[in-house]
Length: 259
Image 1 (tube, rainbow, N blue to C red):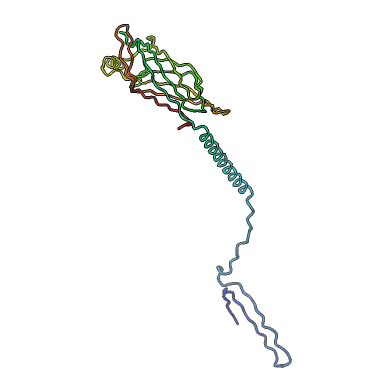
Image 2 (cartoon, rainbow, N blue to C red):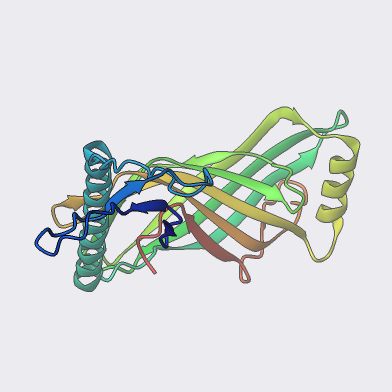
């Protein structure tokens, strides 16, 4: 007798006939198992292969995690220290004002060479109560609106004390070594003859460091740009005073340490 189970495996049940003897128990039927009729049934299951722990990957993840935590902690501490310094010192930027601009010579030779002799006075003010600035020598270069320089000079280095106003003087000259092209020379002549005057821009470039108690900052570059100056050409040997009433100076710093 053939029988099929739920896994489609064929079984054959074989019965053995014995003599009719009531005292003799019949032997149990023999079950013979045959392979499945279809090869797709009873396919062997894949062997279980336990995966090994990836210690290297876990160590790398741990290192990245702790590095990130350390960086965030450093940033947080730096922010807290900056906030404390700001509350204690209340840093403000210094201010610069063009006090006067005296033009003794400003003309162009027949060979389009520029000759300049200008005296510049600037007032630098430090409004801070606990912050001291130390300036390197300051390079001064007056330019026209189109960027043409008409000379160069410099201010001395100085220490800017708290609540202090320092007056700076510089001689701006051009000995004739600078030669202008026809277009620039024409603009300069037209500006000097204009009743409104020749618009000039003063650029001051230097490096400065700040001192707050025992703490000193590294030197950083600073540029002061003063606009709104109107210059007129001197007549004869008499020097002229440029109009600086509308001059405004702007301080640009690479790293902001004040408001």
